Image (tube, rainbow, N blue to C red; front, side, top):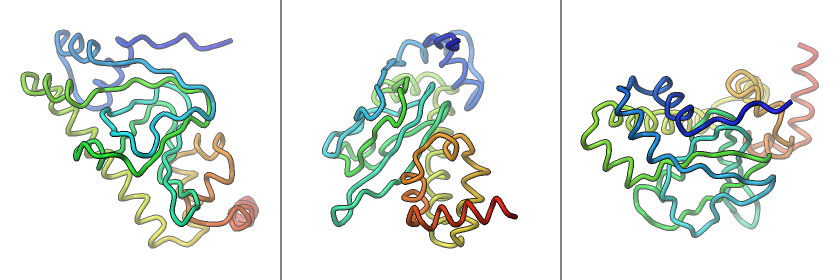
Length: 198
């Protein structure tokens, strides 16, 4: 049995619960700017060279942000249900993105167009708080990932992602998880095997 589909109102409430308290009017405003989007498995959400104009909230599904380096894909971020993603540099500089985003599973996303969000945030302090908290969270996620690959051993990297993103570990292909943790699939298989023995 499929779960009932969330409405824009449900998403507005979810965002308010997670990031900021809101009045009834503010929920109405937030709901009015949400843009629902659906993507099939392996469908591209944002391609390299596109300008990212939205903050995206994954209602359900799994996404991967990646870029190409020396002809190889490098996974920058894996996001699951009820998480935010954006290409932050492209979003704020309004320049073409170096990152690409694809759906790893059939995925339902709600876009928050940046220009609309900024317009309504001018007159609504709680929406302003929501906007700031989303950006803070995004920066923290990037920093956690940077520190993970910079300072942690392969074993600790894997343990940490299991703790922080258990759904990603269960649902994402092994090759993407290995890539995100900056290790080969073989190393990840060994690490997983030894973790099971711990």
